[in-house]
Length: 431
Image 1: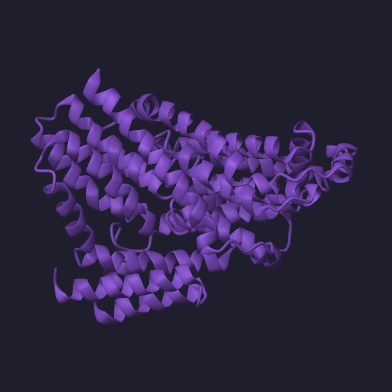
Image 2: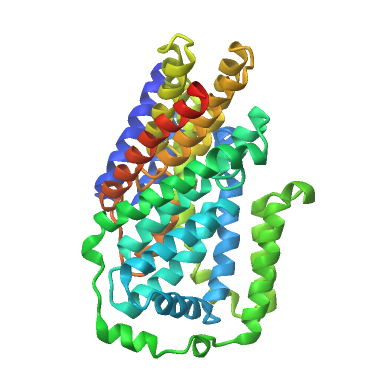
């Protein structure tokens, strides 16, 4: 690699250490790292602001902004309180059954929607449920974001890396559903069992609080029935447009932004008040992180790492699959999986073609998808949904530290990827 590439690596590692140790505010670190990358010439304005592969992913930024506006309006209707009371009563106030409900709902919804959208909708409900029952919300939020990344793996539209893989490989929606959905369901069950062990101290049962919740009527929580109807109508329209965005010719980010602005106009609420609910620090952090990772892409660092890993297996399909699986999980834990998958896709395509385009060689695409998607669970900055939930928690007064998330996420990631080894081997190399 060039001297500039090594300097870019040093800048990224230093920024990552500062984010992990939390010595300096993560937003300041991300912006500072981005500024240094630009000043050194590791990236430039053209790459940082306009490149699809190495720049700020504006689709992610505006998707988040649009959904944050919708959530901001929904919060004022009382709908989240309604759902929180309903969930608590269904589980009869027992914390672990509530966590199971939230994990399953998050995982299933994330398969149909972008996982970031899912956590934006579920996290406020979680905070309210935990407040009602007097239990710490952090374990519940961590469990949900892990479930969102697992559920998003199941379908072509569940996680942005899957969309990139589908466009490069020619794999269809049904291909993803048949190969990844069954495995994602298995891992979701494993997650529930792991959460029972990892968060056992959080499942405190308070009889008095439970009795108070059971006495509540969900309907009494609705403060503005008219706005509930309007908000749900706009939300459903946005979700339908997400699934039909290829036919409509609209990016999900445009759909979310149009939906957010439309709901804001129809709600007649003060736009300034709604804007205060937007997680602006989270959006800025993402922008800085994208520029830093873009510096690694532009200088060829990620490409060198990927090619080195592939060359190490000498073109053998089975070793290549396993190395690609674990390498993708490891790299996606420290860099955003979107630019990583965008960089790796042409290399995987070459490997598949070198294997004669055999059906069995398609396993390389599945190894890339599982590794990149599940690897995002390993650290607090491994996936977009993780960063969003950390921002929501901090704003609510329940800060989740980098290591507070990572010590659980790493366990789930290692076990999930380890389970993928026999799954891929049995499905593609045995039968």
